[in-house]
Structures are given as structure tokens and as C-alpha cells.
Amino acid sequence: MSSPSLVFPPPPPPSSSSSSSYSYVSRLLHSRFLHPQISHLHPLLDSSSSSAPQPLRPLLHKRHLRNTPTRVSSGELQAPTATATATDDGVVYRETLRLVECSMFAAVSGLLYFLSNSLAIENYFGCFFSLPIVISSLKWGIFAGRKTMVATALLLLTLSGPIKACTYLLMHGLVGFCMGSMWRLRTNWGLSIALCTFVRALGLLGYVLISSFLIRENILALITINIHASLTYLLTAIGVNTIPSMNAIYIIFGSLLLLNCLFFVFLLHILYAVFFARLGMKTSLTLPGWLEKAL
Image (tube, rainbow, N blue to C red; front, side):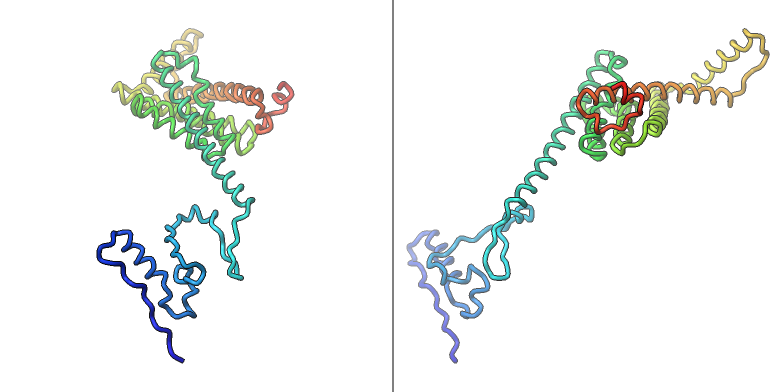
């Protein structure tokens, strides 16, 4: 049995343009110069289906492969189902919406903190700086809350410099991220308040250390010295001739710091719980019994 002869299309005339050369190459590729038994392995090499050459398709990214038809065992092309396409579109929509909302929360929080510092009204709006991070954590997860905190810090780094960015992270960002994570995990308020109090106390100490470095003065030493002098004067006034030790001063200072942070975090929990309940997000919260009855 003789092998099939190779048949090439005639070349274009020398005076033809570049389009004629391209047409010749296409006809050469689509001509049936291979063996008939293997020419059907690739649709570009099979010219029996249509006389006109088909254009080469560009390579698709794997992200677009879900919308391309698949070849089943019978050789026919099967179109993608509408359910799979709708599911993929829903996932992309949710990811885009989460990114947009986190960006908006970060922009609002950064702008509010920047304006509050510029106008010297930070003490009046300090309880709202952590709110966007808590909202992002409750609605989109812990990872979204972390992204909001980092984006806000980067925005403040651009607008106000590293000092304001570090101050925001230590005083408000870490507290909001911790609170949002605890509420997202549906832990009880006891554990949430205790952990947020500890994080707030560490943030205050970090803020004092940064301030001490900037003004070239040991603020912690000044605080302890003032507490020691005040306590000594108080004991002398009541008739107790005792000088407190420095260990007692450190214990008193730490107790007062934790007490201050405890009250702040507790009031922050109540304020945010009332705010989320008014927004219709009460089902996402784990409230104590007395507060749930009040709301």
C-alpha cells in the first residue's frame, strides 16, 4: 500500500502583497499534507470540515478556561453550564465588593483621624477610630479587618508620616482588630474585654515609649516619680510615716493603667453593640443577657 503523496498549494505570485503571503502560509498549514490517519488529531490540520482556513486562536489564561467548552469522550464539545458560570460570577462579585468596602472603610477612618489630629479634636472622636475595622471583621472576616487596619496605617503614613501611623496602630488599630476578631469568632464578652484591655495597655505603653524617644525624655520615669511623690504626701497627710517602695509604685501604676483601659474597652463594647444593633446586625453579635434584653 503506497503512502499518500504530499500536496502543497501553489505559491502566490511575486507581485502579491503581505496579505497574500499570509494567506499562502495559512493554506499551507491547513493543507492535507500529513497522513490521513493522523490529520484528524488537531482541528487545524483537518481541512475536510471546511475549505476555508480557520484563524489561529490565542492562548487563554487559566482564569478564562471555566467559560470555554470542554470535550467529552464522544468527541463533541460541551458548553459550560449556567450554574457554574453564575457561581463564578458571584464569587468574583463578592471579592470585588469586599475589596471596595475595605478600601472605603480605610479611607474614612484615615481621613477622620487625620482631620481630628489637624483640628485638635481627637479626644471627641477617639471612640470611632476603631469602628471601621470592627465592621470589616464582622462582615467580611478577620482577614478583611486586618486589610482595613493596614490600609488605614499606610494612608496615614502617606498623609501624616510614620509617627501618626504608629500612633493610630497602637492606640486604635490593634484594639479594633482584636475586638473585631473576638466578635467574629463569637467569643463571650469577658474574654473579649480582657484581651482588648491588655492590647490597649500595651498600645499605651508603646505610645509613651515613642513619645519619650521623640522628646528625649523618659516619660515613664516621670510618671512613676510623680506617683511616688503624691503617694508619699498622701501617707504623710494621714499620719503614716512610711515611704512606699518603687515596686509598690510600679504595681499601682500598672493597676491604674489596666483600670483605665478596662473602662475604655467596656464602654467601647457597649457603644459598638448599640450601633450594630441599630444597623440590623444584632444576629452577628454575641451579647450578654442583660444587654440583649435592653436592646
